[in-house]
Length: 362
Ligand code: SF4
Image (cartoon, rainbow, N blue to C red; front, side, top):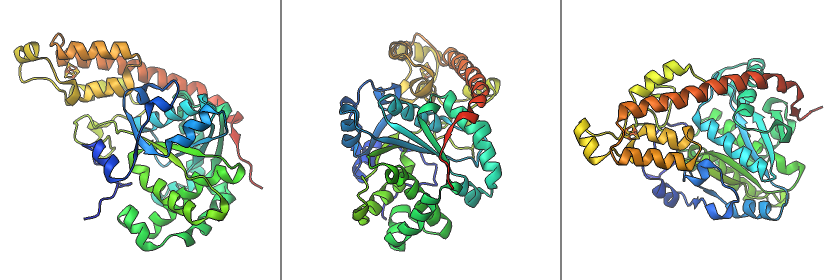
């Protein structure tokens, strides 16, 4: 059976190296990117496509863009969004022009959320949250998909460039909603290039790679437009607290939303899968296995910024000097601080939405 990366699925990837090989991805070249952020340094950003053109643009101080979308159908965000924002913030710091689109058309088509409601949610919650997580609003161009006539025109144009069979090969299934949504994403990814010809990078989860591949196919078939092939950068998933899946709202006790009541989150952490041993004696003697521990993965991906502190935590676990109960208490403390600060920052950033740089369409 032909392998696909399922845009709509929630399976946890067990072997990221195999994914790189199977889908012809490039391993993330840490040495090409100056001052890598936490998730780059720790191998959580692991792969992508066409990194060199972005690394060169950074080195030679040439224009490039970084783009991502907000899906306002949901009322909360998650750790995957947090990693995307952290990577956008990185590229902003490196001189990239950031574009954030509000996928109000897709929210309406996929979840039945009205355009007005989607726009309201984006302004009241999603954009302030992105700013709270590190997005620099002064260096960001925003637009609503429904108002961007260029994107709508491009979507119609690109529809002539793919066949149903190709679509099935990339996505595994083809129905009118998926096709329209995917083609709109292709247009979003290329939109900054119709304003200024420059390379661009899309930081995202691995599950969005089919959209990147489709966009690259479309670029190859519209040579006269001289688009750069889009680059992409993928982060690993934050695992579900039971360790079985990537975090998904379908399993609320195993999923953490942003923001979420710290008390509730701490209760969930108490039940999380760890790399602890069968008994206290065994753990004291053999140490734990942080490599198999969801709590440690949370430290590594999100809760501990300082590399030295992370290493100390790792050593404490490995040496058996700490047991899982105490360690979960520490995770709860870290998580409480994070959620409390996030709530405050979202509130504070609500006042900034009036001054955002939205593209005006006549
Ligand atoms: Fe995980 Fe902490 Fe237990 Fe180690 S001590 S296995 S890091 S919960």
